[in-house]
Image 1 (cartoon, helix red, strand yellow):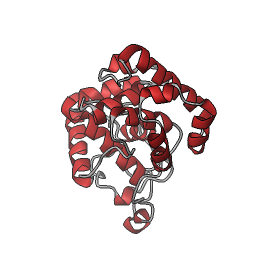
Image 2 (cartoon, one colour; image 1 turned 30 degrees about the vertical axis):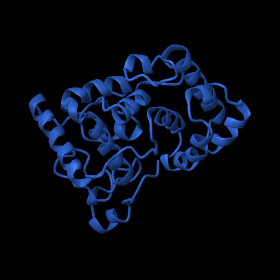
Image 3 (cartoon, helix red, strand yellow; image 1 turned 180 degrees about the horizontal axis):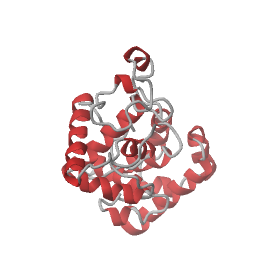
Length: 239
């Protein structure tokens, strides 16, 4: 049964130690963890992250080569033909709303930042279509500024791990920020997301194939038999 509260009687110090041990094991399990969106500069990552809402990274990566070849600067996006841009990103879903966000974001970049993506959280979240999650993805992966990316995988895992019972993403971010060293925030986000995509699935987590069985209060939510669990393990990103 899923458990959202820390184990009974666990002290604050014990919770911090367990969270950091969990992250260390995930670091050993996923030494190659990284952002699974393809990009070469901050603008490309910002656009790709906007496109990734309600869409798999795999699908976004199929779309962005054509997109990035046609639109290379914020000015290009700001002055794009809306129908043409919509058609290129159509397969990512919610393409009209995403087109509006991308064009609005690009126009704001041109007006406020000389067409360059800013490297500060407060500037990024002030852009149309850019929330804290998107901003932290860009800061952590394009600028090297530590940040926690609280997506659906991240939220599910911190609940299962008993790190917090909070449901608001901003509150979750603040709680986890107090559990892990700031220098580790970006990579910890990648590791949690990788684990959520590969083993700790929403419906049937592969508990019997998980390296965190001794630390997870939700062990047993999914099959614990190693052979059964192994069949649930996914080799790469699916969402």
